[in-house]
Image 1 (cartoon, rainbow, N blue to C red):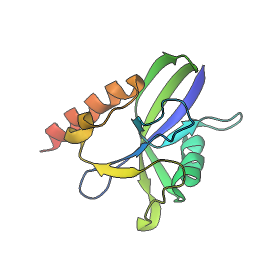
Image 2 (image 1 turned 30 degrees about the vertical axis):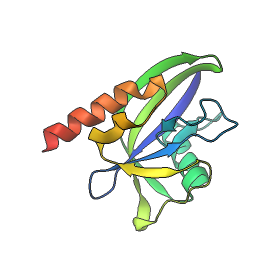
Image 3 (image 1 turned 180 degrees about the vertical axis):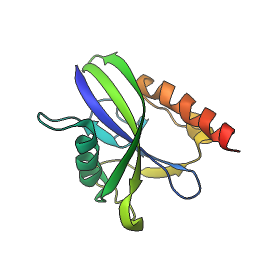
Image 4 (image 1 turned 90 degrees about the horizontal axis):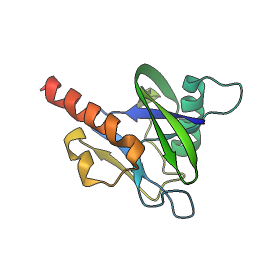
Length: 133
């Protein structure tokens, strides 16, 4: 089972950063939270820092662990580890791998098609956003 470190990056307005998966990759066109597969010898937190640098060309701070989910797809079995993360020094993320990036309010995430593995974290983020109001 592949472990995926996933960053829930929010801005000052409470919006969450999502990216649209590129053509030529598994699950093309679906939206996702930034992150990627853990490499041998690294912690999930180190994986997130590396992946955010590779995908968005920014440095990030990894915060609290939020939850994990597992999902089987035709291209493999995955365990997604979701962590809060923040971009350091108010840097603007660059779009290096996704078709497009968007900052989205948690209540609007359902308007975007996500892989099934992200359903639980979306519910979690929406519930947390309602409680914060």
